[in-house]
Image (tube, rainbow, N blue to C red; front, side):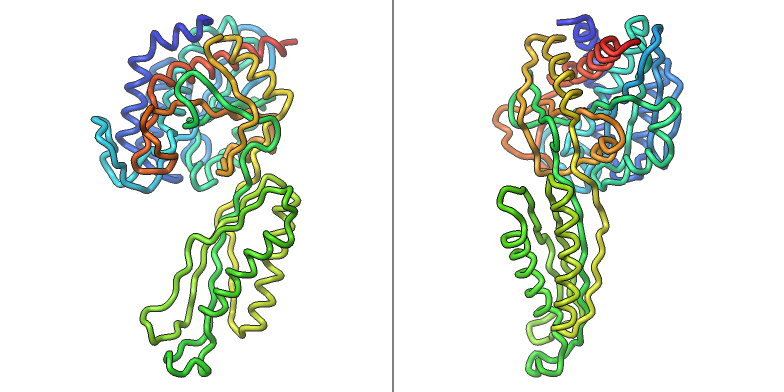
Length: 390
C-alpha cells in the first residue's frame, strides 16, 4: 500500500464527516448553492484557490513541482428528487437524497485534493479538479465545458469514479471502450379532438394514436436494430384522459432511448421522426416530439484505462480490478470523454444485506470505500503524470 493510501486512512475521520454533511443536506440539478459553498470552503481550508466554473461548478488546480502534463479529476455533487428511506443518523433532512452516491464522490475528491497538495513534490505537471452539478439531468458537464473547464490549463486526460454495488469494498470494475449507454429522454405530445365516449366518430382520438406509437416503437427495436447491437426504447409515462366516457384532447408520452452504438442512436432517432410523421397523418392528430435530456455513450479510452487499472492495482495490491463491466445507465462524464481520453471506473461499496440499487430510497453505501476512493484519485493522478512526464 503506497503512502497516498496511508494518508487517506489518516484523514478518514474528516472524509466521513464531509460525506455525511453532504448526505444530510442534498441538493438537486443545477441548483446546489449550499453544496457548492461547503465544497468551496473545504478546498479553501486545504489551501487551494477555487474558481467558479459555469452556473454551479467548481475547479482548482494543483501545480506540481516538476514539469509535465495535466490530468482532470472529476466528481459530481448533485442528488435526486426523492425521499430517503433508512435509519441513518445522518439521513437527508429534505425530500432529496444522495441515492446515487455522489456525496461519496465529492468527499473523496476533496480529500484527494488535500493529499495531492501535500505531495506537490511528487507531481509532474498539474492536477485539475472538476466538481460538477447536474449530472443526473445531463446538464452539468456541458455547462462547465462551455464555461471553459477544459481550457487554461487544458487537460490531457480525465479520470472519474462512481459508486458500485456489485461487490463489497476492495474492488473496482471497468470496461475498455463504450462503457455506459447514450441516453435520449423524450416527450411526445399528441393533440386530437375530444368527444363523448359514446360518439368516438366525432373525435380525433389521441389515445389511439398513442397506442400505435407504443407498438411501432417496439417493432422499431425488434425489427430494425440488429440483435447484435444493444438498444432499448422504453416508455415510462403514458398519460391522458380524466374519465371513462371522455375522449381526451391531449395525450402525453415520455420515454428513453439508450444504446452504446452512435450509429444505432442516430438511426433510431431518425426513424422515430419518420414513424411519428406517418402516424400523425394516418390518425389526423398533431404530434410534437421533444428530446429534453440527452448524453452520448461514455467512451473509456482503452490504452488509458488499461494504464489506470494497473496503477490502481499496483498502488494497493488488495484493491482488485475486474474488467468487462458495461452499464445500461447513462453518465454525464460521457460529454468529457468526447473531448479527452477518459477513464471511468466503478468503485465497489456494497453494504452486505442491502440489496437495493442506485436511485432506490433504501440504498446504502459502505463508507469503508471512502479512503480507497480518495487515495485512488491521488494515486492515479500522481502515477499517470509521472509515467508521462517529459
